[in-house]
Amino acid sequence: MVIAATGPGTERPPEDLLGEDDGHVDLRWQLRSRVHRVVTRPRCLGPSDNPVFRSATARPRGCGGPAARACRHGPGLGQGVRVHEREHGEVLERVVAALLGLQRQDWEQGVAGQALLALGRLPAVRVLARDAVTRQHVDGRLADLDGVGLANGAANLDAVDVLAAGTDESAHAATRAAARQRQWLATGCPRAQDGTLFHLAASRQVWADTVHMVAPGWTTPAERGGSDLPAAVADQLDGHHRRLWDPVSGLYAARWDEDAAGLVDSRHWGTGNGWVLTGTALALHRCRREGPRAAAATARARALLDACLRHRRADGSFGDVLDDTASFSDAAAGLMFAYAAATGVADGWLPASHLDTARALVATAAERVDADGFVTGVCGSPTFDRPGTSAEAQAMFVLAWTATATAEG
Image (cartoon, rainbow, N blue to C red):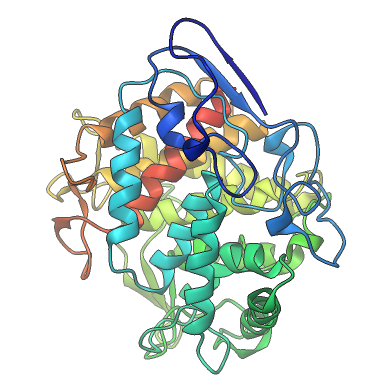
């Protein structure tokens, strides 16, 4: 670990602010002094770099390199972050605290784990993963509460993979749980004839949300770092694109019904488009983007991000329905776009100018964080049809913040 800083307050942090996992500096210390500083690790988090990740399996390809952004193991950006002085730094601590205190559905447990992993808070990731395994459905769906969601449990695979890389009994249970979840994706989950997964058990519908839930975690850590996007992941992206993408607006519709062979909700939800972007960006982060499948996904992600950004409102936010000016304002969609933009800049498939956009979108959301750490003015749980708060918005704030900080480095 290297800490470079100038001015007062640059002395070594006290021991109680050092992370228990690998000695990284706790965020409270990173944000406490009012100086510019750089926080990096000599190597990215991977099985050989941290006991939490060590296992008998081979090191995931792409991990262990000199630059944190090259790591394909975790949710990618935020591991080995350049942290600049920023006015919303203290806000991040409150957002994380609120996230940990919220009730969470299956997908929200997953994105919370991704957010904590991006911050390097591996002990907390292990806790979330253990509970996701405890609540695994008999058919393999992780973190299941009600049996309704078909795809959402797969969002927990990042956290469960971290737990599985250990050596204790919980690691063995996590290894089995991750394998069962991936088997559910491969063969068990109801799907269309072309293999595109359905989202809910009560219908044969394809939702935009599914992209983030399944695309990043479909492959195991050991399978990542290849030259192209895995075929199974590309097939899901293609199937959702064929059904939901609107060539006129360049945006994704919300829901398609396979039996009706048409859209049952043609609205261009901000968070629906956000899930497509975040899931695609994270899946692309885990390969070298040298093959035709990755090239196609990258081109679509660029075009979709540009189409979404055209609907930014005067206050810096987006509508719950992007192209409906009467829909309520939703800052969570902006955080999703910020994450995709910063990830694209860091990984080299977006121009550096998109980093300014990511910074501005995170700052807009930071202005909406209240005294308790809730990101307000977002599409609210539990019904997501009115303004409110949600665990997914809390997690997206963390992911967007860390991705932006990484891209700045």
